[in-house]
Image (cartoon, rainbow, N blue to C red; front, side, top):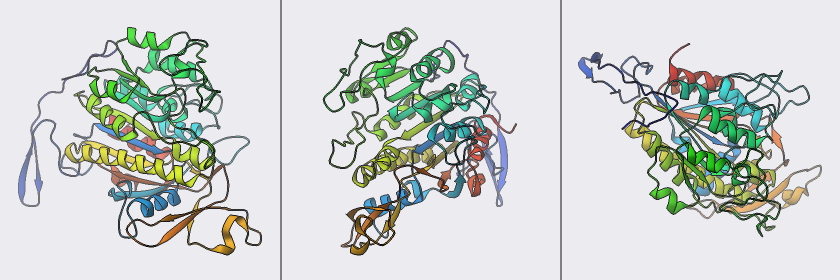
Length: 433
């Protein structure tokens, strides 16, 4: 079944039978088939690579991944995200006249467009001129596209792939662009406030007890009604999402982010209405109906937001959800080797290190220490413990880990700028330039 879309006619490919030698055996590749490595027999996947699943653990550095490994899998175990076949490191610096360290908007713009820009920019260049995004290119090419996030669906990372604005704060403008311009088939996450005008609450009440500052604040009318008029099925909870059968889904599951980011014990909460892996599975089920392939962006925002609060327990909860979502994606790739899966972080947040318990170093008490100790936390499957040491509440310039599997994942081995991820995804989705 092909997803219907008024803006794009679906293409069908002519049936071509090819053959290749593997060792001494002649292997015949039928239309749409692929080798186990996701290629069409030439090692590069030119003929069969169609899909990209891009997963961002916002704010996730190497120490976040190691803390999560100890927490979830223990000393001898491994996370799903760290079990992918290719590993590299990306640098994340922006091209900002006043900053060396990136924010999420500039980092996501580098992925979405292949160009570096200033902090706060959503897929515009350093002169604020709009750039072509992977999401827009994918839609133009007839592929299905999707957003899954625990942030607002109009927050920096998803916005950079599907919209262009000079500043990330224009979230209602971003939502309008989704509907008028790029039209991703699946939009799942938080941020209902930006889709409805002030004084018009939707499924989530204005000024809720857990955060009275949250309230509808859209500037383009009732965008949810506009989405419905365009054929989107609108859902607001897990049951509605599970029963949804449409080819276009809009799911908004909170006023703003799908969690409460605060210091530990001060109203912090990580309990999304719909868990990240559930949203990811639904998005894949929907987008994979498209015979021309798909591009899906998945994000766990709470890794970053909880790291800004130096909140280790909630950060680790978010990492569990993130790795569960990665496993959902891995299960899909195992059955669809024409799919590239990438897991990374847009930047590091918190200046995090993983340490043994040291009474002399607790709460920054060591001479000259500026760190904040957090924990201890148990190492899964053992009697050992570890602590988290935060050195800042902001972003850092530490390179972030990239792990990948599927077509062209071998091109993500090494040390490179974050724009390189754009180039590899572009090759998989559209072929070489």
